[in-house]
Length: 82
Image 1 (cartoon, helix red, strand yellow):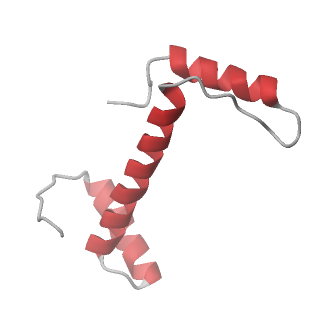
Image 2 (tube, rainbow, N blue to C red):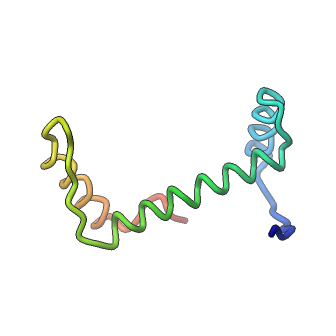
Image 3 (cartoon, one colour):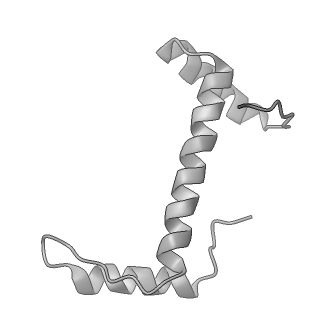
């Protein structure tokens, strides 16, 4: 099921969506929908990372660095959120 929604987007974002649509043969609506879906998936992953005690593991042995990054992100109040 889909629902129509009206958004006001910056001109530069519309231009980027139009360029992407033209280069990929998709509609601007499809491009924007995919961008929103991707952003929602990334936000969900970040929320899961930040809202629980998750141990991070690396196949190259960088667990301490990965854990430090996770700790840093938890303490710096989602700087990218507006």
